[in-house]
Image (tube, rainbow, N blue to C red; front, side, top):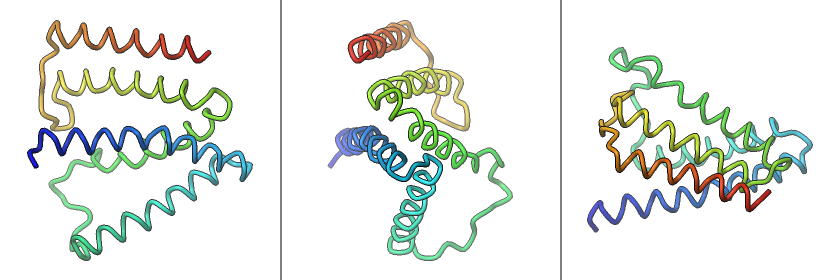
Length: 150
């Protein structure tokens, strides 16, 4: 299948998984009485799944850290941990829909900056007036969703 179908479909499924993960993990945090413990459990399960996939698809890696990789590329795990801890803590108090809506807003702002500047060796896409209008419409949409849910 062409990448124009596979990539968007895969990312759509991943996007559907984000609020499901938030609801499951926040529920686990409430049941365990600790958002930090729920996050640790999530990461443990994720580690097992990731290692299983790695070992069955690619085998044992020979190099984890390489000199030609800038240090900040390894910091994604901190952002995943921050996201998971914060969504696990906030969702039971604020609602999954409200929390994820603001996550989406943060993502829209970040992708616009990353794309426009080509940060972190990302493919660069100039901020055009159409993209800016689309971003503004998405921001308005997020706030309409929050207003409805509040």
